[in-house]
Length: 235
Length: 235
DNA sequence: AAGTGGTCTAGACCACCCC
DNA sequence: GGGTGGTCTAGACCACTTG
Image 1 (cartoon, rainbow over the protein chains, first blue to last red):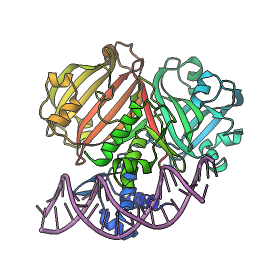
Image 2 (image 1 turned 45 degrees about the vertical axis):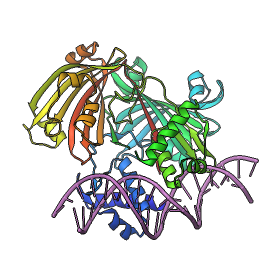
Image 3 (image 1 turned 45 degrees about the horizontal axis):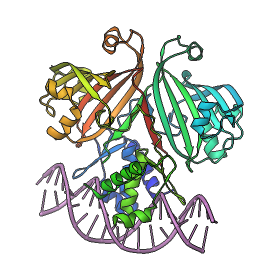
Image 4 (image 1 turned 60 degrees about the vertical axis):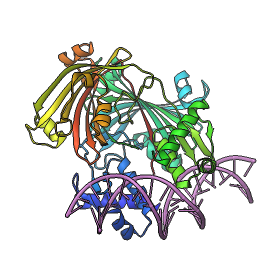
């Protein structure tokens, strides 16, 4: 583990264990340098990581403060890692509706940057948080990267499987958000009515080498899902 | 202007002017060091800024590449600066529905971290992009920070007014997203039907010193608005 | 004036990719 | 093995806040 990652985790733990609240002050950068015996840049890097995450804010001339505005039950849109890791204490599960090998249609081929008809794995799941229906997810994986998935894997965390078993390195992702009226079919799955509102996201995940390997369409249950986003004025 | 900001802008311009496409390669960090006559860290900082923005991705061992996946017409959720600056070539306007001085109710007081009844400025606007209704926005400003707004200002960019005239320094913001059914009243404003879907966001903007000064509730037109978000696997 | 965060440097060393 | 990005250092100097 890198030094700045370790320091960032320690600071997060420090905030948690000292039960610090919004606007509480953290030790100064100089104190942290001494405590962790690293150079200033390393501390700065750890802090700017935490700032991106929305954990802290820094004020030149006065100090480092806890931000922590988390409303409970909101999904942080910034995290890339799927939901399983997000809900520390939550009960996340999935019901697998389909696993098939298909040829890519035009939309999928375009998104995965492959030719139409190339083999992809299609996984359709209904996802639950705390026993509540959360979303319907349709995922297409490039078969070159993800040659195999079974029901047991898909019921758990596909993210864990990809990173830990297949050793896929995730680089970056693009997400597109739309608000729609539900179709009859999806409404049934979510136990809602046709024409009820929903958030539909299209996400394309890229490997560490820039190659797209996963295209997903996710329809969220409008009552059971809420989202949070932290922004920092980046200069 | 700081060195790394200037370099970042130059790189963006370089991409634009050379009409680079997705996955095209940029000069190496070493070449950039020579070109701009700065140390490696400065280049690294400029690049990591562009990476956050979703402009580029970097691959250890092989180089720096253009990301640029922008679908046209999607609003980048990352940018903090209001919409006016986002649509470079677009026609953004606003119709002012109300400007009033009010006492903060409980929700507003809580969000702005002031006492109930403290004076706030309330601004309600209908916003258009390319002549299309885009959203209804209700904003509450702490009167200590924003003592005055008039119709002419609110028809233009409040963001410009705040930063350039009032010299408010924006620090960070929190956004909460919900999908809802429209009420009769808001539906009329958006020229939609009651119970049509909508994205409702609540945003709290903080000043550079951490003090919240603006609480806004924005309801987006579900047909005329779409959103984009770039994420990078942050280690 | 003292304290604190932000930028920048010059250089070392490491991890990874590709030939 | 050569090229390229990523981490880290030690220290200088600057910008801002607070007493």
